[in-house]
Length: 115
Image (tube, rainbow, N blue to C red):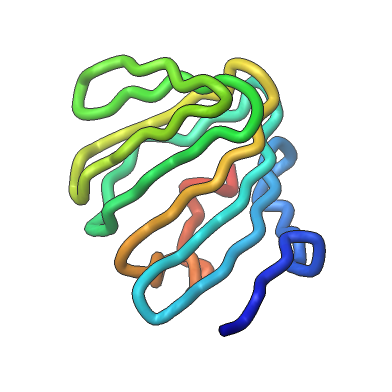
């Protein structure tokens, strides 16, 4: 069973406020992200189920029209196909888990994050 070490996985500078590392398996994508205060993720939806866990910091999500504040040590479940957006209120370290894998991220088809 392979071990993945975040310290050995390349960091991708997605935009000036967003660094991402990714692990892809046959059934999921796991992404570790460092986001600076003021970063935002525009509204989008995807067929992947998502769980976001904050290791550090604070974020505001708009999930299906509901505002949710997520703090360090908390996780948020985002069902498939539900529109959502996010704003970073304090510098964040987060882990996102997606199932099935984020094929758009694997292809590099994620321009909505690169603004």
